[in-house]
Amino acid sequence: MTTQRISLRDKVAVVTGAGAGLGRGIAEAFGDLGATVVVVERDAVRADDAAKWFEARGVPHRIARMDVRDAAAVAALTADVKQAYGRLDILVNNVGDFCGQTKAFVETTEDEWEALHDANFRHVLRMTRAALPVMLEAGNGGSIINVSTIEAHRGIPHGVVYSAFNAAIGGFTRSLALEVGPAGIRVNEIAPETSDTEQVQPRNWVAPEYQKHIKDWIPLGRFGTPRDAAGCAVFLASDLSGWVTGTTVHLDGGALAAAGWYRVHETGRWTNMPVVADAGIEM
Image 1 (cartoon, helix red, strand yellow):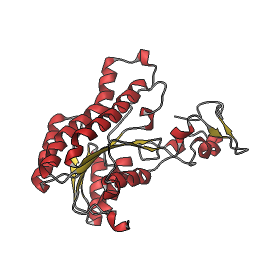
Image 2: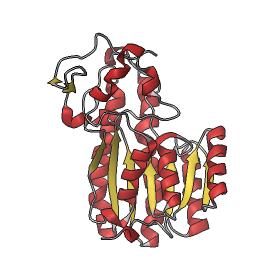
Image 3: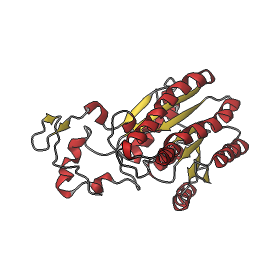
Image 4: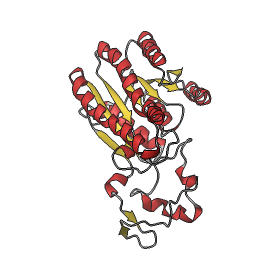
């Protein structure tokens, strides 16, 4: 195996929520590796910023200023991609949001469920169903990457519905992988732990007296970054993962493996008891 296999040249990739954060990191990495990147972003400022980045580097791209919750916009996007390029090789369903909902399940409303469904799962179904005919007709195989959250694979109090819809992404990923495998299309999931991005800045939320504990909370000693997500996505999009489908990459610095175990800052020993007196977060 050589590094020459790490190439996305001549591939067309659609990345949703790619104006900032993990999606932006993934989109930039794809562009650096030779792909034509379709950046899907609803926020005008982020979309414009992404456009400047791609234009400055001469990376072939399109900016789709749209909301993936809009079925008509999604249909128009895939039709545009087919007309422009005649193919679609990589789809990254990256959009996700807890919609500011942190409350006990018994206090939630059906309207809130619908908002979380739209933001975390329904759009994955919608984007994938729209993209698959283009991928299948081109006959070049392809890779679909669904980005969920590590909270889909462990319990999270006061985030029950958010967790449930993200967990559904795993079932969708595994089942769809079976259906489209014969066509050479691979379907996989990335489940990130808390990551530092423009929108989410956990390091800045940690109370000053607890900053020293950041390296103790996650086995690899830090929060994630867009670069980490990009590395996983490049692997799943490229020929390096040519025999990988229907699986989940836990992009979590070892947090899920730790399963509630933490290092004690002062001694370096491990404990499964709380290591700080309160939540540790100032928001």
